[in-house]
Length: 482
Ligand code: GLN
Image (tube, rainbow, N blue to C red; front, side, top):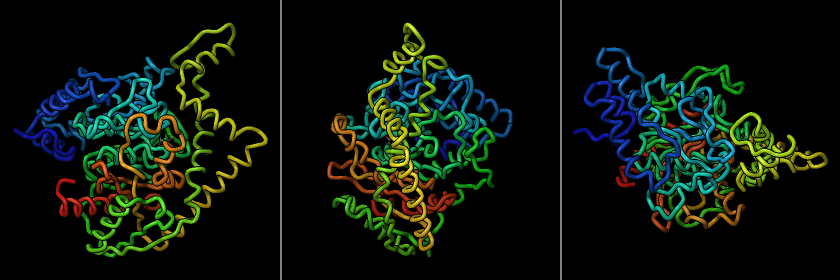
């Protein structure tokens, strides 16, 4: 009997060759969802009947000799801030519970055009604001490796689903680290593509100049395969880039000879012994296999977190103004329109979302705009020019994904700043709009997985995939269990 829980790449291959049916594969995953989701809470909406009819249609196509797509029969989980016509889309917020979008996001259309099977919608921190999936109106998701710990966030449901074999691959969104951080916490691969490479039409906006959709998978190859399906120009998204489509899978399993790889000296002060060990091991492996390792400096990187926490809430406060009790989801009545809006937003939004709206409104208020938002924009430009200078000397940069492994539930809930610190290594790529991937590499003192990130200049997604794939292979040669 074929093992159904192998890579998405192999699943699609075997289904195409008829050595297994899409339905058999799907039933394996549905069984896992049935047995594990009650405890882990990765999926918040699901519809087996739709998934089964999708699988039937693919099996039928294959039987009648028709062409099938590159994700034929691959069961995929979707973060619940991506609009789906067949499933309600809530952003894990009370304000949107019960809202059924009248359309599919472009990425959903792309996935189904390639014959992927949509399993359902996954849990997240409300409106993607958070790093632990504890800020969800549906309750927290658990880390499948140790259920007393968070899976990371905000795309914690998607990362958990892939790790626990409730989905083969998944989509998340990454505004400041929300794909890479949960990927690192759950010991899987997660990638944030270049800003504009993947359409965001149908992604419910958090911070529009930072948001990006990307894949989760058990391997770099699976992420590259999903990226092949979801990337490409979309006239419905004004930030979508109109460029030639790359075949990202073709950059897997290449060598890294002669590539120059940078280490950011400003990050050294944040590295404890375990992080240092994982970064040094990764650098050594890459060097032994033909890469050159160089120290680089990004003087403005130390302002990234502060910059992000001005820009992201500012954009969020504006984007979330649309949830007013008139157009979408929840309405709590009042004596007049103003009261109705206040009641709706008071009841509908959770504490963290309200905190971001207040931070953002303050940063944008007249008299403070230049001092806060204006300064943040200047710092963002300075960081981008730091990266430009660095990429004159190196092809890619490597650094840890997170300052710690997965933490215990409740340990950072009372201290938002501690929670925000989870993203110090991931946020710079969002501010710059650059691609970055996290792969599992090393363990923390509690034996929880750590991640290594590979960053590159804008539109160098293939380089990120090439180096990540090489490092993944080298890691497995040294310690096959990682
Ligand atoms: N944790 C960060 C935040 O809370 C990033 C979230 C994200 O990438 N969506 O804003």
